[in-house]
Image (cartoon, rainbow, N blue to C red; front, side):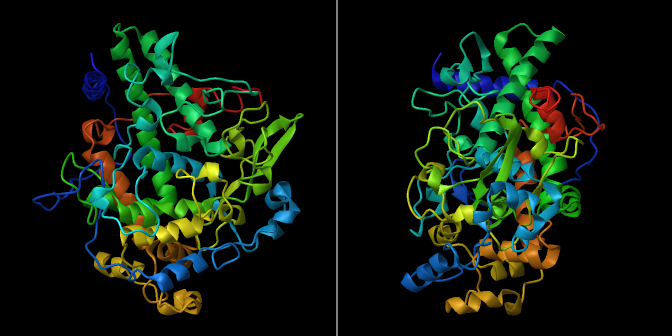
Length: 513
């Protein structure tokens, strides 16, 4: 059997097994209006567009310079966090967060669950910053579906290095720290389906949780005793893992990011903007660069990774710290290293009811200062600039994205006034009237929703894309069994991320913390 044959067989078995369970669903989607017919739409393995609108600005040195100025360290977007106070004080002392306020409605883990989703559906490894590129010519190296291909790769036959050689339908997990770690080669490089899931400790820890969840799902399926063929057990365990993950996206994460009202409206009344043909989902660049990068505004400058990793004391660190370059066990949260203290205590990131959870940052136009000086290892292309906001803004030139005002008008949403964007006038290129979409989405959330969730433009784009990916994927629970409910245990009767982590065996109680 060839690798392609195995991949197709695994996909057929996965989809075929998808009808095995049924139940009742809390949010029942209404009939969705059929998408407009097109003679040719974007390819699922390439990027595409939602809107056919002119770019926010004509490419040139003046515009590119203004984007670099806007996104530079110490610029308008920099929260100017007092890093000299240290990573612990930036968490414990609220007065140090005056310019970078917390979001009381999000826990610190919301950011990284969202990053994990991004890595599951989009990976642009070919386009270049500020070089105009046709999205239809730019390959997406992830499938446009919430199918966990970033975890499973091409499957246990075609990509054996991801799987346990002693039980080949389980995923490989290693240790070497106090708890689990990603499997690694001798040089420390992670052996995983998407290298970006080793950018920092938190995303690596979340990837480990998915590996362990699947492995326990394999045990769960075997205990039921209904399946004997190994690949059938694998397909059922993958379905169990994937459907619970999809449930969390639709019922926990998405309402936090866009608001429950928007999610309900998209499910009941259909998608107005993102309308791919059935089976032809794609990732639109307005989502990939414009709206969904709101997560960069949610990142804290520092985190408490765990409660007992530093000689039985909590391990605090900046998300990234340039002074730690080259160290085997750096003091920041960067990935690519294994040491006993480098594990995640999830009670910091999700609410287990023990009072230890920490909040996210608001979605607004202040970006935590460490994100302006990324280590090259945290950049997939390993190139400059190292300021994440500059990279986001220059990508608007790559895709020739429309302005936030144009998108709002096309969507029928109320546009922000130039006075809401007055700070951009100092750049001298008219961004206050024709604003880069990412900045517009952040400002819209700040002005309209007080940074607690996205506004009408950003929220609608994000909600429609995620719902659309689920509705157009023949393997998803929403397309296959829309009345399905999670079958694994939950604390409250509604399956949540904390229940996911508990089943995976990485929750505080399982670890004796």
